[in-house]
Amino acid sequence: MSLKWIDTLDIAIELSEKYPDVDPTSIRFTDLYTWVLELEEFDDDPKHCGEKILEAIQAAWIDEMD
Image 1 (cartoon, rainbow, N blue to C red):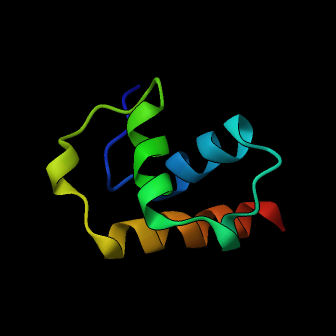
Image 2 (cartoon, rainbow, N blue to C red):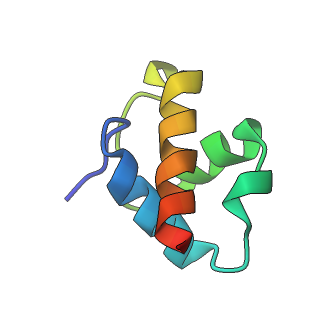
C-alpha cells in the first residue's frame, strides 16, 4: 500500500507510530512535511502538498493521541 497526500488519517497513524514521543500540537509544518516525505509507505508528488493538507494530517494525528 502506498500513501498519498489525501490519506491524512493513515499518514497520521504512521507518524504517531514512528514518532511516539512527539506532541503533534507543537510540530512545525516544515518538519511535518519532511517527516511525511520520509515515511517508507509514502509515494506522492511533494509539490501536491499545501497548508490545508498538513493541517488535516496534524488534526488526525492529534485525534490519534486521544
